[in-house]
Length: 178
Image (cartoon, rainbow, N blue to C red):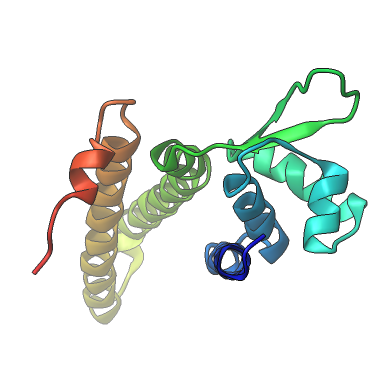
């Protein structure tokens, strides 16, 4: 392979590894995804391990995670008994898969905790001194702001995840920002 193609492949795969770490995934997961994404043909676990110089066990474990997140899928290759994989190349689908399961759950959890905190403060209001009531009102204001933020985040996630036609990726990528 030409040295430019090799350099671009290596830097892209490495960059996706760093990006994966930034979002709380493993570096290996990001590099596996990048390797699959840049491969025109499906790759086996052995090929992935050899390419990235990692153990087959690590490849297998991380591939299960990539499948669970909807970032890769097992594909059938004629005449082969080994498992082969292909990356999900639709970035909006990847974003929907990841946000749909992880971020929505976290936003729901945050809203639940905030709601419980508000209920506790309101229930304890009569038992608090005047100074404590003032502090409780301060807490309620701050928690209310947080609650509004997470409700907005929930709406934004719903807008992004709402449906296959929710956002036109081609149109967005053509927007020029000055």
